[in-house]
Length: 128
Image 1 (cartoon, rainbow, N blue to C red):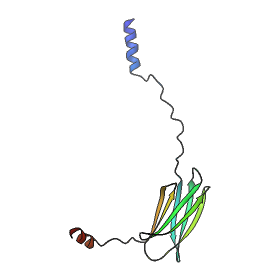
Image 2 (image 1 turned 90 degrees about the vertical axis):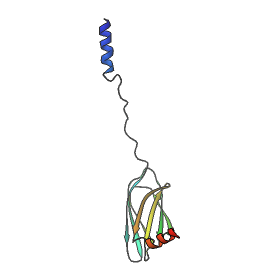
Image 3 (image 1 turned 60 degrees about the horizontal axis):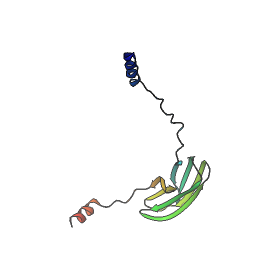
Image 4 (image 1 turned 45 degrees about the vertical axis):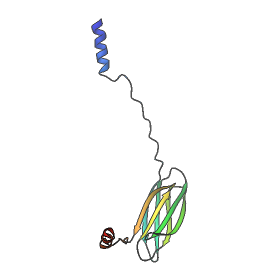
């Protein structure tokens, strides 16, 4: 009898003695999913935005920069899935558009090439 109890105790240690918890269905992501494209045109840039997932309605803040200077801010109210559009003034040089939803950056789109410092000047400033 004692051997049988010992054998049962040993066998129970080798198997799962509980059922794993069912994690259930995962919660949907809280962050919206957008596909954004910035197309240059004659004197303007056009933002084409397609919203594919939107947990709740809210404002998409758009910040339009030329080089490192903020030149325009705009807000789009996203209430449903679908297509949205916005236009921005375009000049010579590098431009950047940043899309922010509820304080989190969703995307950054660039047009042109950023102006970078001359490496020789940076090296001279470091030695001086």
